[in-house]
Length: 428
Image 1: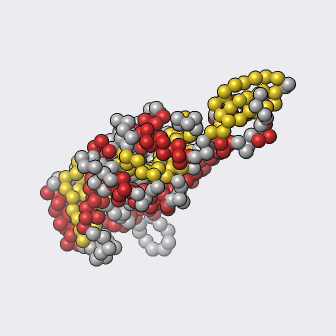
Image 2: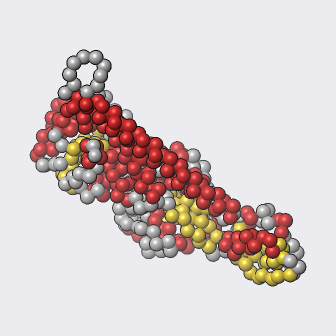
């Protein structure tokens, strides 16, 4: 087992966090990111001993920060007896390696923190595959440092590599093979998920994806709407795996509601790619239910981050209901008008207490539109699959048999009416 893989198993007790302010950033913005990094690190069970904000005109290629500031950070680590140094910005493999030599401690960046959280939260095979892929892609360019002591043992001239070089290539080959294997497995998993999506599309039932910033209360809302029993904790990325449940609205309209993984600032592109099949739930849904933590002091900014990521995923133009969740935790009235420019429908709710859920459902009924169609159908006995579909996707009001056919009086989603036109008959 190489050093990088062993590093994933190390326990970090205390950490010092470093954020970097570049010229186009404000101090307040970087402090917000550092506060969020504190929450991420705490999610891993690591105590934050201190934070440090560094102002830079340009990044240093060696340590990201200047040598003088690097000495101050090392002193801070020693003063707080910290086990790990965490940067809020990505470190290149050489920077990370040099920092670990300089600080004589483990040094990681925000991307590694999020990967490790995802590793803790993974439950299904798909989530495990995605996390393993992201971890190995992070590990691959950092393998060299594990064998530099062997490289120094090379002797003589020529182009023949020493034991260190040979071991590096062996390790790289092993990791590349594992990455290729994981990608093949994920293709199969995604093919299965695509088939599930196509099945939902054929049913004609509108689909609603619950999206939002991490820890905004998406899973709690899914449970409130559908009784799904999904894990809902006050933690970042409490659930990674999408859960789809069927719910019938008061007007008789069935909808399929899917919870998705939470968004976050500076979500690494490698993780967006690794969790593409999960995030695609938002792109393939007919409608979006965007959940915002109204009690968060930066609720508007978190909302805009989510909208930006949705735009990047190609789901920015979906009809949307914006739910201002945790409204019961807001001491002063939060004006929905503040968010009116971001969505046509804005509804204050509390998914935990149930406050405002009636208004939310009313808005979902208006959003999904079309309502239900009342049809009389004559279905040949050879098409019992269609009869089963009527029970599954609509409401069967009456069923009769005669003349080698099944006569059904049904209420189904209006969007199915054109597909059933050939079986339609006059009321009996």
